Length: 164
Image 1 (cartoon, rainbow, N blue to C red):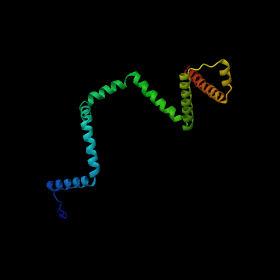
Image 2: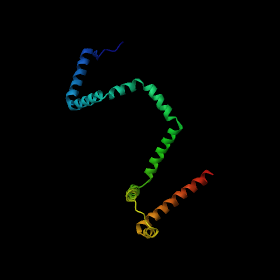
Image 3: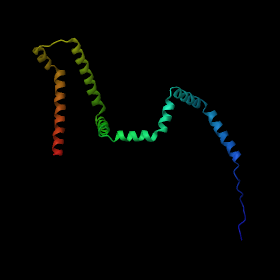
Image 4: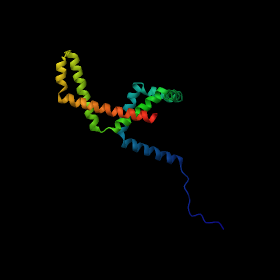
């Protein structure tokens, strides 16, 4: 024998579901009135400046734009740009923030003095230059540059041995 029917499922009423959906949307609109008005002002500004027209055109032509972008990325020079960008980020990540800050501050001060000396146009005698070479600032800078060049040369030689 067949089982007795104990549950009766309701057949969804499309009109009732639509009314409930509209009611939920209206409640959300009221609850987020400020956000929606701000969004509408932004969209109006974008429309007034024709940004939305440009975005719409880009969406319509997305296949062609994608093909052009892929062609540009596949060029050897672009691959080099991408690799160089990745190497630059890797380099910046390998530096301690204090190191980079100190070097950048030194470069800034050096460029400032370079610009000042170029504007003044003063010539220095050999004796004045010799005297300046003995200053503690000049010795610190020269020691730093020699250490920099030593490290640079070490890496160059190591890479040359590895590539040979």
